[in-house]
View: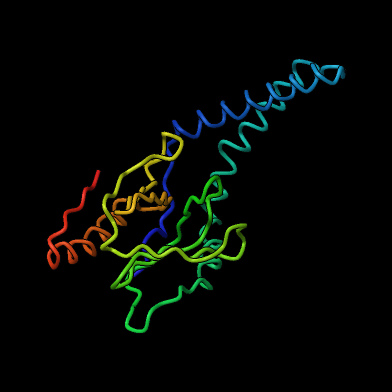
Length: 196
């Protein structure tokens, strides 16, 4: 079963705000560059045109192109990612995800097996490798937001105090499936799990 193939739909309100923010930011950066380089400032009409063009490009056109063509690209990357499994371990659920390792959002794929959660990075990252989180080590699952706007982040806390921050599409489905896997452990060993 694959989760996370649907892209997050952004509202028009968010897209318009993004276009305005990007346009104003672009013009602001240009003005700072002109100020410190002593170059002649372009006309106000030129700056307004550039700001509108950049804002529309980054706030409206870019998200449209990502929505339209992004899944084709990301699905091809995900096809080649295969985790290292133990002898009696089977992949039950998988999907594209990012795992934050320090400042880098490492792209790859997350797998739920009959024994643990696995994150395996793709080859186009600085930090590569596989991260295994056995279900019995998971202490808490916390819902988070990316940039305090988008509901697509999951923080997993383990018994030894480690925290793993994942960015996924269809977050609630991931949490539901992860809770189902952990519930099996809870019923067998009597451990409790917190979900926020």
